[in-house]
Image (tube, rainbow, N blue to C red; front, side, top):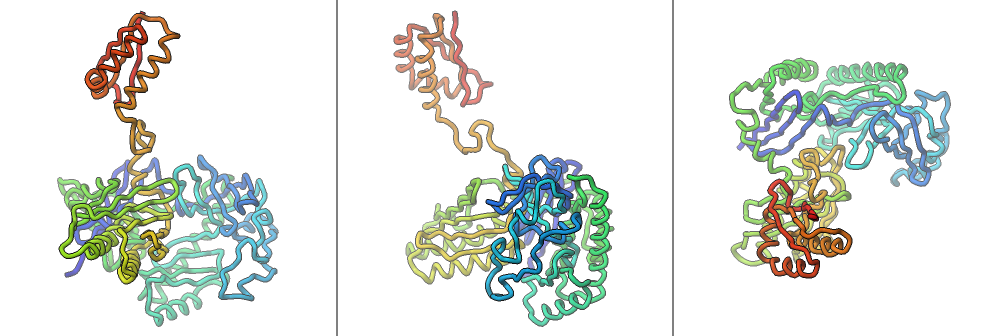
Length: 513
């Protein structure tokens, strides 16, 4: 049975939401708010404010709240030379790859790649592009390797390289595309052929190239006039990017609920994929678009820690500052034959759900998966292959290691923007993001200690304790004996008053004259 893929776009003045749906199931969800717009792809004229030889990196002011982070491997001599007459790039020195092409370049230790202190100096102007949005307390990750994306190509104006999407697997097609690019591209420039260009003609490639090179000329001219720090080029918004990156022949429909954005999207698609124009549909139903397609509830569950599997097992997803941990449990699933089979089936079902959740929640960075222990090496190998196959559908690059002796799978997934749950949620003002709060009994004893401590320093014949009703109930019932003993030791009468407006974590101790 054919699984139809739809792109649903909910456009509003305050927020744009994009859902990629396959067979009624939510695969990807993206959100963009004008007040929190993603910055990936934007190009800036920045000023180097600090060079750190010990980290082989520099901090660059691009006009945002926090300075961006520029690593030495992301510094490109050509982008610096746009502002400098001369630069010590070391291009005449031999690169370690020339002598040992099968080995990876040694980076800043390679004689052809000098250290950051040789490339940059404080106060210097550089043209940079945001490669990763600011995440948490970290500033944006910057690069001097400028890239400009179009429908079929990614242009690298400062890099002499030709790349073909790894998802184009036919070697004959890959070689044909490489020859076309080599014949058409200007010397010293680079292009990556995107997956949608698998069967593209030379004329279409040439048209994309011409558009991208004109855009690059405009960006260079804007950089010459730009203040420092200042924005030089702003990438297209989420709605247009979704059409550019997600709209392929496999997409059944693009459904958008804004008439104005619908017209804008039609004009945009006409420039690069006119044959797909008919698939863009305006939705004007009375029921909100996402509710009509039955995915609003799925979006509301995106931030849930626990995800149930159909068998009755479940996975727990916990994200920390440094990594994401996923725990697999059998839950209510008890199996039919033996324990080993029950564990294997739960783990294999979890593999598919984990791949879906990583893509849906946009979880990136280091990921540790704690599968249920399996003794058979064949089962471990089967699980590893299944996880690789499940992640192959993901557009973000992933690197997966085999299961360790402790039953853990370590993997990384490319991260360019904030985890979706962090976009939709914020830290709890009560627990501070810890995920738990003090127990009521702990708070009771905290109140007792404060009264005992202050009794010898504060005058007053009585004390009023204002607390949340749940805490008041514990004080007046289970802790009534301790409360009476405290009255005796302090010589004050203590009255407990229920205050519904107070959070359970807050309380007030009032000393009465």
